[in-house]
Amino acid sequence: MLTRDIAETFARSWVQAWNDRDIEAIANHYADDIIYHSPKLKTVIEHDSPSLTGKKALVEYWNAAIEDARSLFFDVQKIFVSSDSITLFFENHQGQDVAETFIFNSEGKVKECIAAYS
Image 1 (spheres, rainbow, N blue to C red):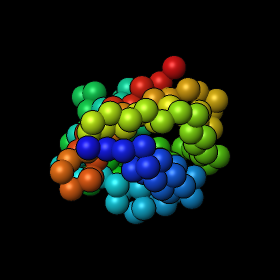
Image 2 (cartoon, one colour):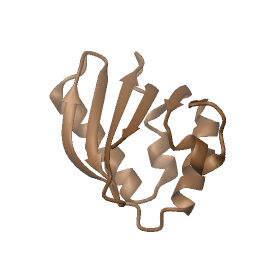
Image 3 (spheres, rainbow, N blue to C red):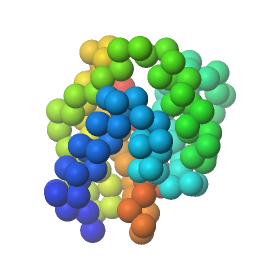
Image 4 (cartoon, rainbow, N blue to C red):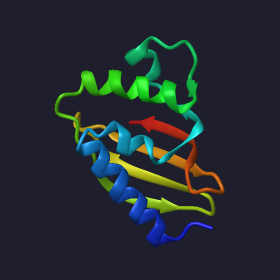
C-alpha cells in the first residue's frame, strides 16, 4: 500500500533526476520489464506502437527525448496516491500540462507507466 510520504519521496526523487538529466537515476525507479505508454513515442523515436516494453528500450527513448529537449524541466503541481499507483501532474519545459501514472510492483519499482499530455 502506497502512502502520501512514499508518493512525495518518489516524486521528489523522480523530478530531481529528470531536472538533472540523469538517465541512470531516472531508470532506477523502473522495473526491468516496465511497460511504458506515451503518445510521444511516435514522434520522438518513430515507434509504431503506443507502448514500449523493457527498461533498455525506455532508456533509449529517454536519451532521444532529452537530446531534443535542451531546456528540459518538470515542475510538479499535484501528487495523486492510490493503492499501488501514483499520478504526478506537472508542467514541462514546453508549458504543457502532463500527467504520468506510475503503477508499482511488489519491489517498489514502476512496472507500468502511462503518460498523458494536455
